[in-house]
Image (cartoon, rainbow, N blue to C red; front, side, top):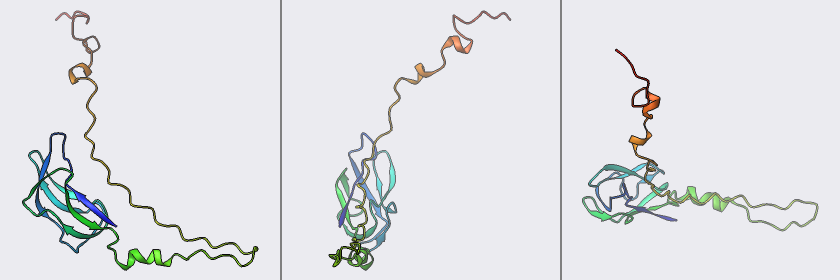
Length: 152
């Protein structure tokens, strides 16, 4: 199964990014969350992790190119583990009808779960009130008009 590698959005006002360096080459085996390439935006430089384990099948956007966010920049073959990925599917026995009612029926081996969808990058939550209002009230701090008068 092919998994698209997309240019992530690194902030609310970021609409494009430049691929500065690919850390892997086509044909290289990659693990999920392993650094795949480096990007540069007007606000941040970052290493982008692999969205899936497999083999880097194709690089669609070369180094030095600037592309909009959510652009497919490469493809990972998630089944690229070769024989290792195909072996569990081939080893699963086909269900056979039971010749006698006394014998339990054979159950097929459970299929591995589908890979989870790539999580959406969500900006951090904004505070519900400004920091000036979130500070300790004047009466509680001992300063301000309602505080007891102090004589020096």
